[in-house]
Length: 442
Image (tube, one colour):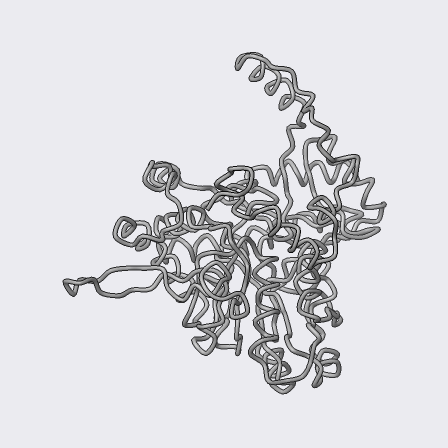
């Protein structure tokens, strides 16, 4: 049915529209939106028409203003060499132009690849269920908190997180929790790891979820994961563990330390460093299979009895009644998950372990060399590290980082006298130059 204006996309009559506006107490549709005048559309884009060549020339000039920096940056965003086969296969038209795989009859290849991706996460985490459709680590963490609120019998409403949780990740979590009437609170850290004793004192009946990371935001390997899991269990809270697909190849299996849910980043495989674009991990025990947000690819049989794959248990609001939905997460990360699966399959189990071990070895080596520089001490935390570590500098950290930037290197400033350095296979070849620059600056 078309609307009063004849539009097939606006099926409501003027009377119906007026009735709905009256029900919510506003005079017109514009009153439903609060758009600041500074960003409101005034009818003009202010973009002059230009030829393709002119636009390409302008973009080249604009991109040419970017500084040519070697990034030793991490804190949740990691870049590893992506084999060319990942581009060649994932850029095939049947993958690149595919929409969500709603029709299994024409999507078996893509669905099988996603099933393999889920299976890899299951093997890495030791948990029984993994999905293939989370935006990034931060939204996966938010979904874990709302899942905890639904499944835990405790009357608690507090989500406990490490005090050194990355600011952006915490902001996303708080956004999720605000809608679920949950509160986010911090527990202390001790030399880069969780202060388990302090956590045990804080985690009482009001805790609905305890979150820990391995490695932590400063790259430290968390040494008492099982103890954290026991604290969560004693409090009746969900134990959620954050990690990434490469680190999971060598660190303790989450299931073995009592993790109920594993979240984090899978974009460390298959994607270049994007500082925004990601692929979230979400794995859990099969106790929560009907509470998993996003999409699951399941293995079934077709009419002939042959193995077939299909999207199943899609407990989001587009597919079931809104009041029964577990999530409103919509955008499908299937193509990014496909790239991660291809990258992981290309490495193979041994190659993935080797890459993870390199992340440990190269971080230890670079920290030792920076520690030899007078005026610098690394690593700050007396722990094993994956990829990254904190560095104490006698001079103001911001000034040191600025001087390093003029010499072509980017590092994080995390305190008045603290830097953070991340090394992977992509920038390890410039480690000598970074050490020389640190020595020159300090």
